[in-house]
Amino acid sequence: MYLATRHRLWALDANDGELRWEHHIDGSAGLKYIDGRLYQLNWDLQAPELVARSPDGDEQWRTTVSQQIRGVHEQNGYVFVAGRNRYWVLHADTGQIVRGRDDWVRNMASAGDSLYAASSGILVRYDVDGRTLEERWRAQSEYPTESGQPVIMEDQICDLQYQPSADDGDVVLYSSAGEKRHRIDLDYRPYRLTVTENGLIVSPSATSDGPLLAIRSDGSQRWTADVSGHASAIAANETVYAGYPLVALDVESGERLWKQDSIRPVQLAATDSTLYAVTGDSRLVALRE
Image (cartoon, rainbow, N blue to C red; front, side):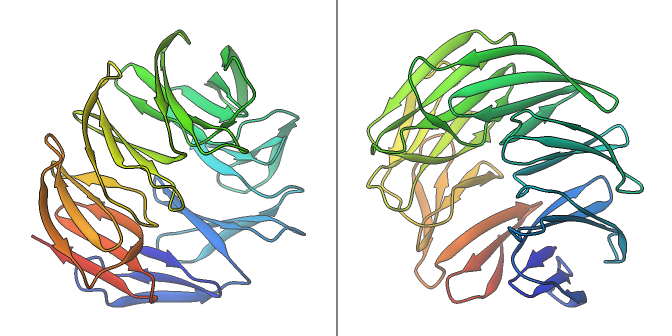
């Protein structure tokens, strides 16, 4: 397990939490692990960097770009790095910039040779051909809006949208051909989408009073749960984990299975049979059945 704090990058044994290695880092960073390579996204506004590391923490390369990094995707030997209104293509083994284009590819999601990007109410599907992104189709909302992180569910792409000046939002479901299938109106601002085998889970923003919402692939509601907190919901082993304090819900019915009052997570992750929670008091807690 990899964890970034404000000044440290940690690798911990997923079974017992033992420290494997650590590195000093200069400021806040995001992490993404792709096919044996750990990407460290340094969020310095003056000199944003992407650092590639081996699983052992050894630095392989470091590349500076001119805009704050909004997303990273690796495919077929190339790394696509999204900025505010530009993207760069880097060679995955060297970090050399081989291509740059003025285009919006924020909030990325991928499936096969397709890359989806959502921004300002626009969802674009790109075909990835080597180091080139070829636009295949573009869908746009009827009114000005902002977009969150899209997710891919079976043959649908789900786009989270909201009004910056309003308290409501919606979830729009598109076909793989870009046709709008369903739109779910929400009377609160959504924060993130989570895919389960049974459909979607919509997490409300921490400042809203909205419920956790489970919807089917046809846009109909399955259940709601009054769960609030700073960590967006995740799903694993037919269970949804969310809340502050932490609760576990049955993914099909929404029935509350258990509650941990002592664990107040700000971030959640799960792998195999283990649930990991970063808490508001700077602890990392691992729970197993």
